[in-house]
Length: 369
Image (cartoon, rainbow, N blue to C red; front, top):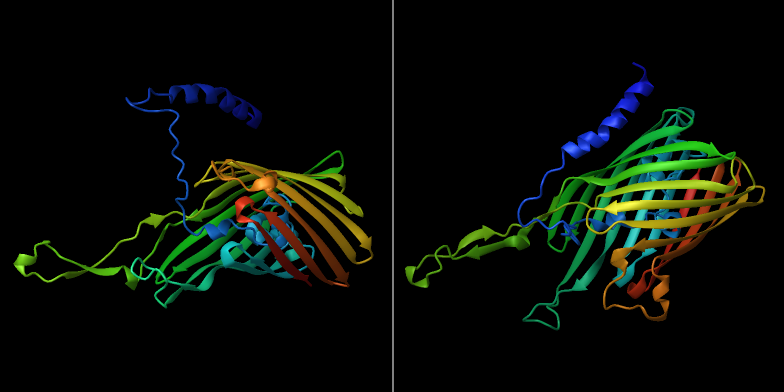
């Protein structure tokens, strides 16, 4: 039996198999029950954009990355770096006086057949006053929050059309006097084809799949009365509070990107992209993005970017951002690139509108050699 016949037979069997698995719901079952674990994850900083280009495109970038930023968005794009080695650094002053930093370095090997990379992400704040019920003006002490992820990436380009990659991240969270540790991974694939003589790319990624985070620390140490009867004269016994475990922010993403203008070495390029994403701690969302790039002169390129994201949890009942309410989910950005011989440098900027949380800006620097 040929492969086509096997596939056809399998497709014909799927409806009958699905029908055979349908069972009657148990008594009291409500088929409209929402089991989404809103706010039920830890290490949420892993979902923030890792560079200014990704921020301007609202993360709609899984099918667009063919440079070092692949270590953050889709490891399958790493072997397609235009230069043998790249490095990058990004900074975003975030809401509520927090800050988000990222850095990465990567190498394309064996003429682009494979690639390796390393990355680091840090999010947090410091020197925040401690308030208690007894000391509502502050205790005079302060606390820090620091969340860090160190990643190692490997990717293989199996052909000129298909590549796959894997990123492993070691995640630590330090919240005041508690800390937690986890290992998470990203798996990504990218397929490249042509439609109408222009590039079409499709990407599938699973992000942050890994172990849960459970916080421990001396602040959880306490003492309890084992019998709760002072008349017995039993001293309080040392004990430790146990924190709940929280999963990392797992995401499933599917993205498409198509060069509607230019592509394949053209001086001008207009790319449209869309992405569907399903997080494990909120409702699914969809985003659309556009990137226009032009060769201004020999060795000088410029790009304009914009995107809009639709997520149901951005529509908070009873909360309005005023006249700018319709801008929620909007991101814009621009970039410049210079090439001198085998060395190039890129500067990128992004603006994100975050509704009632105001706006944020992000800056990135990229080097290639």
